[in-house]
Amino acid sequence: MKIKFNRLFGKNDNNVNNNENLSLQNGTSNAQAPVIKPILSIRNLTKKYKDRYAVNNISLDIYSGQIVGFLGANGAGKSTTIKMLTGLASITSGDAYIYGHSVKTDFEKAISYVGAMIEIPEFYPYLSGYNNLKFFAKLSGGVALSRIDYVATLVGLKNRIKDKVSNYSLGMKQRLGVAQALLNNPKLLILDEPTNGLDANGIREFRMMLKDLATREHISIFISSHILSEMENLCDTIAIIDKGQIIEVKPLEEIKKECTIAGSQFIKCNAPNFAGKTIFDKFGVKCLIQGDKVFFNSKDNYMLSQVIVELTKKKILVYGAGNVDYSLEDVFVNIVKEHNKTTSIS
Ligand SMILES: Nc1ncnc2c1ncn2[C@@H]1O[C@H](COP(=O)(O)OP(=O)(O)OP(=O)(O)O)[C@@H](O)[C@H]1O
Ligand SMILES: [Mg+2]
Image 1 (cartoon, rainbow, N blue to C red):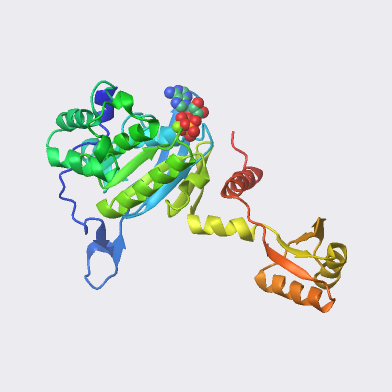
Image 2: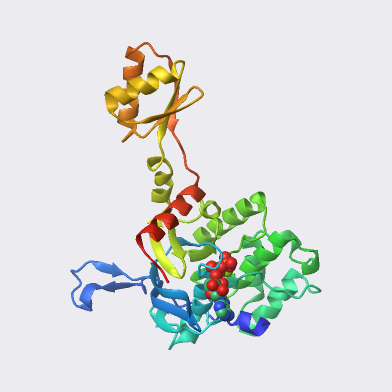
């Protein structure tokens, strides 16, 4: 298992030219605009176990500097995808390309750009964090001792790296897992549910650590989770997988906007029933009254402001207004529900 795990971070020759992922369209004229190539390109990737598709024909591109969240419920196919990308599961059909190298036919080269942490990282508990890293560094070869110190600092374990792993908290083990994945200077970090089991504070700290190291190390991150809010303030893009299929790829900012756009708006006032009737008569939208709040679906903030003007004209005292924020999880569940309404997946 450990040897297998170590294969996840092949030796990077460190010769990746930052321009390697830039090519000229058609490769003919300098006058043409450069085409940015993805660092990771998943193409029609499929995994079938007996008669069941765990991953069904998924395609996704990740570009330099991107942090992409791979979001899906339990059993959606996240780990299977990641295992195929890292050689821990065979590919039924399709392929993935890392810096243009096929995972299927040029695995050693493809994986040399990758650092990965899959599920709960395993370490020798009776060895220190430092000696575990040293062990893995030796296995993969060519890692300078100074790199161990460096990655330990990067993941915030500098002061505890000489402690035995058996004395580490779960969060510290996860950090050590990331340190291990970073040993070979990867360009792409693939993390499978790295915050599983961490408390809210642990998740926040881990997220900040990842964001910081993505900036410092100039690496892209592909990170899976079943909780959208874990990706907040970390990922720029979210790819949603459901029943083995990618059903949505969207900037996180857009998903966040949906939290308000998809929701209704409300006003708080001293005469909610009268306000509800006024809104219905004037704007033709149905209202729901709860206490001193009147909920309604307005098209935009302009309409909301017009509602306030109208109510004020009627001498209704409006002392609150806003958008009903759906939580990120609500939006995630809605996206999956909507998709399932419009498609039938066997
Ligand atoms: N070795 C296997 N043999 C048969 N089926 C498998 C195997 N591994 C995974 N599966 C099935 O593939 C599907 C996807 O599993 P996968 O582990 O990729 O989901 P996941 O999104 O990582 O879920 P979780 O959030 O629980 O980790 C599930 O239906 C699972 O039962
Ligand atoms: Mg999983």
